[in-house]
Amino acid sequence: MSTSKYDINCYIGSMLSEFLKDYLPIIIFLIIALGISCAFIVINLILSPNQPDPEKLSAYECGFEPFEDSRTEFDVRFYLVAILFIIFDLEIAFLFPWAISLGNIGLLGFSSMMIFLFILTVGFVYEWKKGALDWE
Image (cartoon, rainbow, N blue to C red; front, side, top):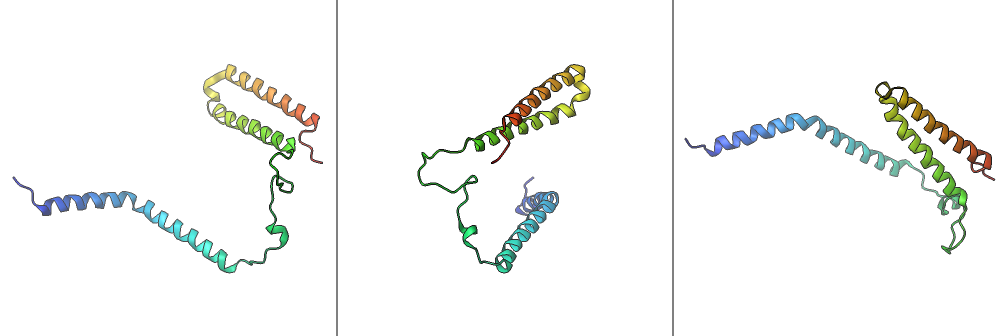
């Protein structure tokens, strides 16, 4: 029994048809999203005012004027705020899986998370009292 080119083409055509049937909504969604994104960019370029003032054209770097020399002292408060953000961001990252599995981990898991939150709260209050969060 031999297969003809017509049978192979029908088989490939049916496979392609099944593929398009499965992925056609995703392809249409991507085309619409790309079209809307391009339309927004074009509309913005056409309708937006293009009259920048010197304040908009000035460089902005970490809350103070940019400097020429890379050895100029940098205010440590920016680093401190960044570190505090990372600490409390990680705290939230630990809270989500803990909250989901709270029913399975029992009293030991609850108490260990409360100790963790207490230590972080003590650290936050210490930083607050030291004035790390105050801007002059």
